[in-house]
Amino acid sequence: MGAGLHFVLQTPHARLLELDVASLRVPVDSGQVGLRPRGEPTLLAVEPGLVLVCAAGGRRCVGTAGGLLRSDGRQAILLTPLAVVGDDGPGVLAALAAALAVPDPERDLRLAIERLESGIIQELRRPEHRGGGGGDRAA
Image (cartoon, rainbow, N blue to C red; front, side, top):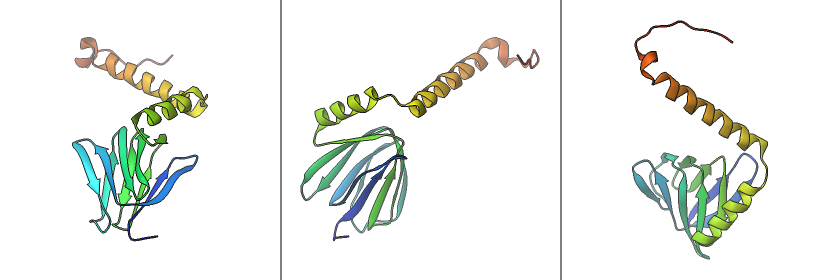
């Protein structure tokens, strides 16, 4: 590790990026958080969006599906279910389109579960479910 902040981008399937950086800009619920070398220890819930990575070789862009980022001031590790790396916005969009074009049964299953959860939540918000009437039924 050098004098910068050692950044690791890790998905469940691969380590996509590992390099020393001067700074990171990370999307969080309240906006953007900047990280630099020798900063305070931090644990962040990263929102889906664009992470900007400033390194000696220039700026890199990471499109992420969100995740967790832990930094101790010397190293920052971003754990995410899906990420793509590019040199600019259009590069990230092209990499994302390519990644989404590849069939992935795990991703398809997660999307199906999310749709199911949304349907259940919408059904439970209907007026007939709010009064506590009716009983449980199993199919």
